[in-house]
Image (cartoon, rainbow, N blue to C red; front, side, top):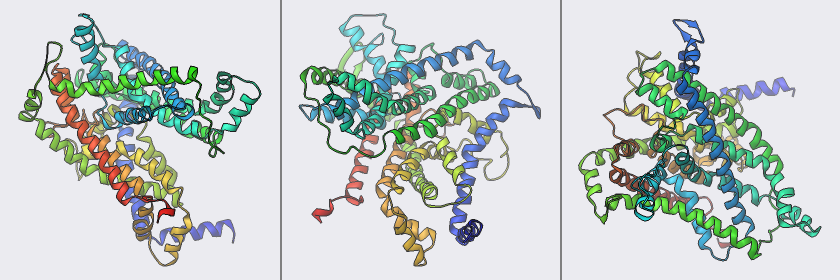
Length: 569
C-alpha cells in the first residue's frame, strides 16, 4: 500500500466516525471563539484604525513615560524573581534528592511549602508581608519599633513572588535531579574530585536546560502576575498593573490593547522557547531514570548548613501563611492583638455569603467542564491523527502564556463591543457565563498537560481492540480511555476548581456587581486597608481549597488506578 493510499484510508476512517468529527469541530469553535478571537481583537485595536493599518497607537503608547517605566520594571522584576526562584528551588531539590536528612519532619515541611502556593490565593503572601513588615507590622513596629518601614515597591513584590514561585522550580528540578545517573558523579568522586567540583562539572551542566526551563517558567509567571504588584507594588508599576489602570483609570482601551500586545508578545516568545526548545533539550539531556540508588550525603559539614538554610526558608514561608488566620483573629493589627471574631462576623454580615456562594458555584460549574475538556484534548493530541491536531494542542497550551489582564482586555473588546453585537454571544459580557469560560480557558493547559502525560503511558493496543470489536470513539473514550486516566481526571478537576476560585487577574475586569467573587473582595478590602476582613476572606478561601485537595486525594485513593500493588491482590 502506497503512502497516498494509506493517507486516503486514514482520512476515510476518520470521517466515518461522525462523533469524533463533531467533537473536533466543536472544540475548534470553542478555542477560536474564546482564545484566538479575543487576542485577534487586541491586535486589531492596536494596528487598525478607521479600517486602515496604522502604527499610531503603538507610537503613542511607546512614547508614554509611564509605559516605558512599567516595561523596564517588568523586565527587572522578572529577572530577579526568575534567578532567585530558580536558585532557591535548586537548593531545596538538591537537599531532598542528595542529602540524607536526619528527620522526616523536614521532608513533610518541604512538601507542605511546595503545596501551599497552589492552594492559596495568589496575593496571600502580600497580605502577610504588609502585616509583618509594614508600618504597623508585628515585626517592624511591635518587635523592632520601626515606625517608618516601607515594604512597598520592587523589594516587596520580588520577595513575595520569589516565595510564591520557588516551589514550582523545586518540583521541576527535583524530578530532573532524580533522573541523573549517580554513577556519573561517583566516577568523578573516585578520580579524586571534591563534591563541589563534581556538582559544578557534572551535575550542573546536565541540569542547565532544566534550570533554563525553570527560570523561564517563573519569569513568565512574574511578568504576568497582577495581584501581588497591585497589592504591594506601591508606585512600582508593572505592565500588568499599568494595563489595568489604563482601562479603569485613563479609560484608554486602545492604549491598553497596545500595551497588552507588548506584554503578550513577551510572554508568548518566552513560552515558545520554554516549551519547544528547553523542554525538549531537558528531556534529551536527562533521558531515562537513574540506573541505581544514589548514595546520600551524610557529611555534617555539608548536610547541616544546607538543611538549616532550607529549614529557615521553609519556616519563614510557613510563618507568612500562618499570619493570615491570625490577621483575621486579631482585633486591630499593630495596636491590639487580643483575639476576636468580629472580622469574620463583619464579613458574613456584609457580602461574604454571596461572595462565597458566587465563587463556589461558578468554580464548581467550570471544574468538571475543564477536566473533561482537558482529557478530550489530551486524547485527540496523543491518540488521533488529523490535520488540526497541532492547532488544537498549540492554542489550548497558549492560554498558559496569556497574562490574565491581557485575556480580560481581549474579552472586553471581543464581547462588549466586538463582532458579536447580535446573536447568541451578544449577551455574554457581564454574565456568569463569561466568568465560567475564563475559568475554563485559564485552567485548560494544566489539565491538558497532565492528561497528555498520562495517555502517553497507555498502550494503544488496548483501545484498538475496542475499536476492532465495533465500538465508536465516544464509547472507547468513555469506557476504556477515561477509566485508565482517572487519576489525571480527578487531579485536573480539583486543580481547575482551585485555580478558578483563587483567580483574580483575568476576571477583575470582567466581574460586575451582579457577581461578588472572593478574590475581588480580598483585593478591595486590602486596598481600603481593612486587612482583618481581607484575612478573614483569605482564611476561609484557603480552608476551601485545602479541603478540595484533601477530597481529591481521597477520591484518588478510593477510585484511583493504582490503589494496591499487584503483589497484594
